[in-house]
Image 1 (cartoon, rainbow, N blue to C red):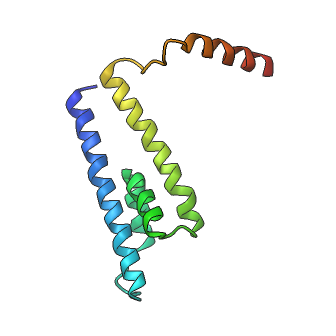
Image 2 (cartoon, rainbow, N blue to C red):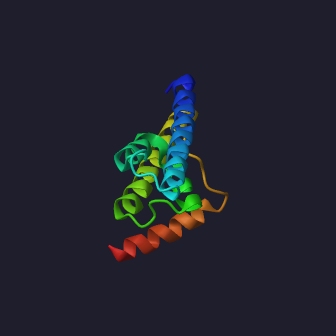
Length: 121
């Protein structure tokens, strides 16, 4: 993968996470002020998280205690975050050309894990 494409993807994630964070903060502020008509729709908050802003959404949820009791937010936001973490990992590995390695004793850890895993199955 081209480095410019990877950089564009990372930049996109930064921007969309900022947008998601600001949207959650704005909605919480409007909710505290008692506004009902000018709030940010829940569907828009979820879209911001779904298009890559899950980290910003999760940070705002925790910081402002906003939408933390809503089940759909508690499930989807971490799921979106996991999805984009995997996507970011894939992009970074494809640019770097290899998977990051473990410390020197990784062979011992792998062998131990492999023995346990083999015994289980």
